[in-house]
Image (cartoon, rainbow, N blue to C red):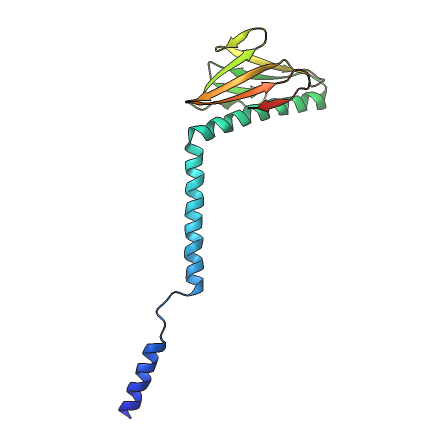
Length: 157
């Protein structure tokens, strides 16, 4: 009788599995993916080049939005770029700051390079605007926003 009990105990010890279940593996992989995803977002937002790209996209989106409002409302809209206080805004709407580490200048077809003061971009009710280029730089990376006076397009290069 003791011999049979010892055999059963020996068989149970062989069949007992000491590994991980599929559910445990899925949960661990989920947490690893979540941590990697969040850390990627954190580091991507702190990189200077991503801040430069984001700022260029925000400025161009503001100018496009102003053009759209001018066309829809049939009245002039003005985007203000303040080079001294380092912000830009659609006139009458909250301003957005330009992050530190990003230098900004405007190349106007008539005034040349503008480094100081407020620079207005006036968009007519027809959607036409003055031409020019807004240049943003951070270290060695340079982004330029080109304003086309004929078509009214805003292109980031």
